[in-house]
Length: 301
Length: 250
Image (cartoon, rainbow over all chains, first blue to last red; front, side, top):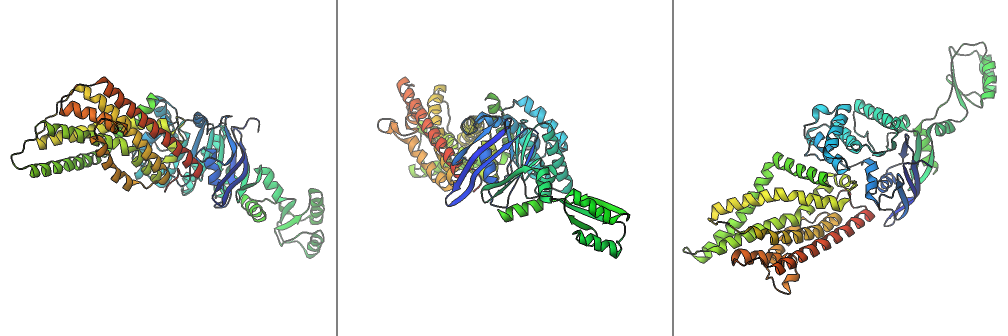
C-alpha cells in the first residue's frame, strides 16, 4: 500500500435508488496486474470511471501517484484508460493521427508524440495501417489502437476495461503478452474482464466486486491454493486390483481413476503406501481455477 | 498549450482536407439562404431598386452572423457527436482539463470557420454584385462579438453535455442571434450579448462611423462578461455531468 501508484479509499456512489458502489477500496502497485471481476451491474465500470476521474464519488477519495485527479487534472498525465463500450479513438482519423492527437492532448509535445506513435504502431503490428482511417480497420485493429491510445503518453497506471473483448485469438494473445510486458516494465494495471481465463493468465491479484461491494481482494496464487484446499489427484498406469481398491476406499480415496484424495500431505503418504508397488502415472495437487473461485465467491456473497 | 493548439488546428485541417464536401455544403447552404433573401428583398422593392451601400452592410451583418453561428454551436455539435461516437470520455482524460481544451479547440476552429465565411463572402459578392471593402479596424468589434458568441456557445455546450439532444434548440435559437446582432447599441440593448459589438461594427460599415474607443471597450467588456458567464455555466455542467455520470453516450 505504501508505494501504490493508484489508491482508492471508501468509494461510494449512488444513482437514485441504486447504490452502485459501496465502500470500495483498492490499490495498485507498480508491476502488478489486478483483475477486477464482477457480474454485469456489479459496479466494475462505475469504479473504473471513478478511478479515472470521469465520475465523481459521493464519498471516498482517489489518489493517483499521491494526487487527487478531481482537484489536480495534471495527475491524469499518469493514467491511461481503455473504456468499455467506447470507441476511444476518432474514426475519421488514421491510427497515426489519433495517436499524435491523443499524445499531445495527454501532455506530450508534437515531435515526441509522433515518435512514440510510430514506435507503438510498429511494436503492435499496425504500422502498415498507420495511414488508413480507423473506420476502415477491423475491430481487432481498432481495439489494439484503443490500447495504444491509452499507452501513448507512457502512463504509470493503466485501467483496461475489457481490453480483449471481441478480439480474435491471435490478437487477444498478443494483447495478453503486451499486458504482461507492461507489468514487467513496472506499470500498474487494473484489468476488468468477463473472460476469467484471461484474468487468470494475467493477474497477480484478484478483486471481486459483488452488488457494489468488494467482497474479496487477494493474491491470485494464494486465492487459487486456498480454494483448491488439500486435494490430490492420483492416476495409475492401470486399474488397481480389488484388494488395493478396497484399501484406497478405506483411506477415503474417491473416483475411479483419476482418483481424488481429500487430505493433507501426511495422509497422502498412507495412500501412496497402499498403492505400492503399482506404477503411478501422476500425483498432483488438485487446482482450482478462477471461474470456480468466482462462482463460489459470488454465490456465497 | 501551444502544442495543444497546433494539434487541434492540424486536426481541423485534416478534416477539411479529407471531407471537403462538408465545407462545400456549408458554403452552398449559407450562400443560398442569403441569396434567396436578397432575391426576395429585390422582388419586394421592385425592379429598379438600388440598395446602395446598405447591401454591403447587410451582407457584412450576414457574414458576422454566420461567423457567430459557428462560435455559438460548434462546441455543442462537437460534444453531441463525441458523446455519441464514444470519444468524449477520452477527451475528458486530458490533463489540461476540459475547459482549456475546448477553449483551444474553439480558437483552432476559427481558421477553418474563417475560410468558410471567406468563401461565402466570395460567392455572395459574385451573386449580388456587392463589393466589400471595409476598414481593417472593423475586425476589433467583430472580435468582441465572437467572444460573446463563444460565451453563448459554452452555455449551450453546458446544455449539450447534460441533455445531449439539443439540436432542435440550437436550430431555433440561432435566429435569436440575428435579433442580437441587429439590436440597437444603446442602453438597455447594450446589456444583451453580442449587441454592442455588432452595433458598433454596423455603424462603421453602414454609416462610415469612426471606431469609438469607449464603444469598443463596452463591446469587449460585454463579450468578456458573456464569455465568463458561459465558461462558468459550462464548468458547473462538467461538475454535474461527472456527478451524474453523463459523460458517456446518450
